[in-house]
Length: 155
Image 1: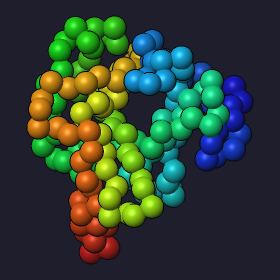
Image 2 (image 1 turned 60 degrees about the horizontal axis):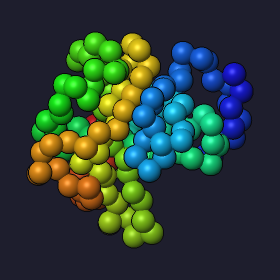
Image 3 (image 1 turned 90 degrees about the horizontal axis):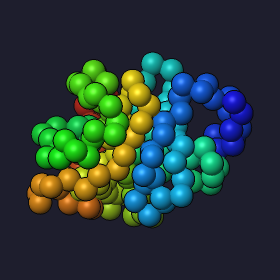
């Protein structure tokens, strides 16, 4: 299927790459179909990806794996919230957090309070509010990313 995207123009997307968010995303409840787009060069690991809406080409949310910037990220989530996604395991669960990139790059943040949880087997996802009070909505990641880039240069 051919879709239009915000950052990548038109792309041919396989049906099995569509992720359904039955409840939508917080603040965007009217949009339910998304895909993950990776902006990487061959051989690189993705740092920031895009949660691209299928129904609205202008809607693309920058996301990343929270473990990249917070290695001990382990939010408490009610099992009932994940039931609609199907049976979850370490092999089929994907967790992303949204990234906010202001003009001042030293103020880049991720939202650790409301991650996106995706079951890669059923291709269903949800965005939930975690119970842990120690995960903020705006967690500054500038230093974590800078250190990660320095480590890559040393390799």
